[in-house]
Image (spheres, rainbow, N blue to C red):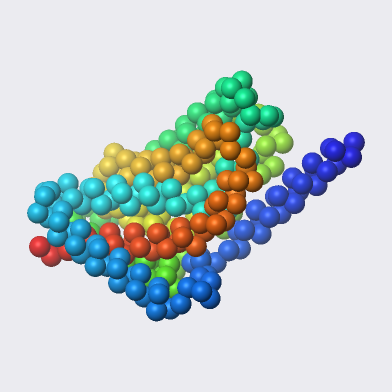
Length: 286
């Protein structure tokens, strides 16, 4: 009896922790050890790296291939970086094999991972279709170089936002996946529900502004299929970290690792936005 009560209290405390995490600031508040000058140097390195990469890609690839490569890297990495948000923590800790780790427990859990991926796929189709159709309806006449330039400038602005030098708007629904669903449905159904909620991207809180650039890419992609593909790449990055639960790794270890790399994830986030935005502008200028 006491053990059951302890487990219940533990689950409640865990849920309260995740709820509290929805109140985190949009851009991570760097520690005092991370000085303003250090952050400025990191931004400068990101911009210079992006300009150099843009020049190199111009010499090696066609403009379309180069731009597509930049977008794919940004979308996939952005999906991975979205793990550092309340819903990322929730998915990793709540969608786990039941009981002691073993081949049989992992085999029983595998359908949950599968339905979770299916949920992401459905989310990509729904959101991508909405963005693709809206873009075709509203922006089909906008020249590609204008839309790319606008997204590149926006990426640079959000990169500065992540480093704390600029305040950018961050419109999102500050909500998480429904934690109580795990008490009402079997694991595979929960995986599907969580996958769809996270795969729609705007139904829950996402801590990386790369989402906005990916959304813009989907809007200006020129069609529904291309928009679905863009969101799918982002969603693959979001879904893959849950595969860590196939390994004999304790949840506490995973959460501690995420916490240690919280600041680093935001730095990588800002660095990528600045570098890829600069690379895209360089490609357009050459």
